[in-house]
Amino acid sequence: MGELLGVTPLEALAVVLGTAGMYVTMVIIIKLVGQRMLSSMSSFDVAAVIAFGSILGRAALGEAPRLAAGILSLATLVAMQAVAGLVRSVRRGGRLIVSEPVLLMAGSAVVEENMRHCHVVLAELQSRLRQAGIRHRGEVAAVVFEPSGAISVLRRGDGIEENLLDGVRGGELVPRELLR
Image (cartoon, rainbow, N blue to C red; front, side):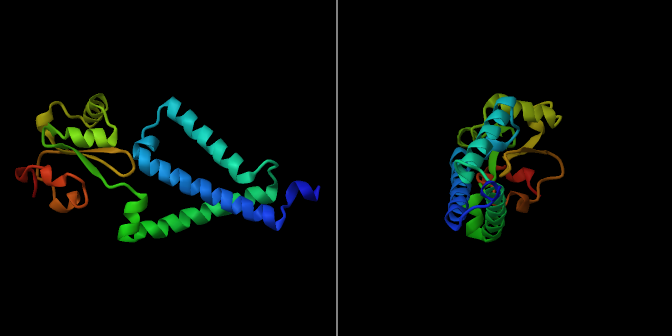
């Protein structure tokens, strides 16, 4: 019974290193592919994320998963999340893990290069504009692709506080008359 629950010190080290390696690999993949991978997921995307989790779990726990290995793997993931949180709190470190927000529309103009960079197609942008209640492009002050993968629509009106666009790639493209 003990062999089903416990792990040797060498197996414990393998679980910790495997889990940490898989975590770092997923962070790198998400950084390379973009946060788009985890935003507004379709049923296909959900299936892919479940498969990723299964692969990650299997690789981290080894050939014969044990309770202790599972606990070690979970503890390692929690620790990696804590470390990632600390890294994100440092200005330069945050850029390593979290992508910057990107301007998709400046006023009524679509920023094509940024759309390509974020892997957002015009149909997705138009859908988000409709969801925000935009009836025509003239109502748009700015559209931002957020680090979470969400798309924010800022309407024309009182003007946008310039500091809301701090750190937004392409934020300088928003026409001055739309700013406060």
